[in-house]
Image (cartoon, rainbow, N blue to C red; front, side):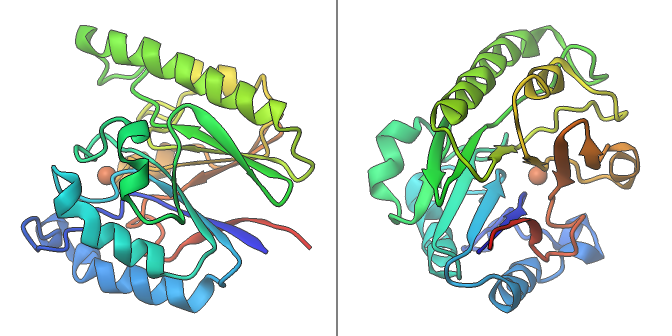
Length: 235
Ligand SMILES: [Fe+2]
């Protein structure tokens, strides 16, 4: 089986927020994502979705997008929220209202086939040029959630690796590592997938590939040309 990652799908089933205005890459992006997903992902694979899933503000508005996601290939879709997922309030409150094969991570970990999947949204870190005083509280909270998620993943004793999913990169928009990454590198993490970055300059500076023992993947759908990224393969 294989593990795939993709993020920032920015679905809008009711077309209230068409993405075409953000450039050619976003024209008809939903059908491009769906087409590539069906082409590459198998029934028993896992897909990690790194936030900014859908534009809707309410769960009711987003449900058709979530149902579509649940029906795409893949035995489980493991998700974290992004800064635009206003519909995602407390996971505990809504997890029973969404399709059963969608798994919401919020500072926790789950095990599947000897792999541990853990995640949280992340946030801007103090050394990021966009960080301001109002980010401090959320930054503190997200750093704790990340530590909690990683501790839970280690406790699961996975033989096939720890796969960490975030929305925000643990790197600044200038490509420097942040305290999120310092924490991540202190754990035996195998893969790290994140999104959030949509600008070409950010794509050029964001570190990817092997850093220490961690395989790092930028998975914004526009960066990937709307094709899920394979991040892991087991026998
Ligand atoms: Fe996004």
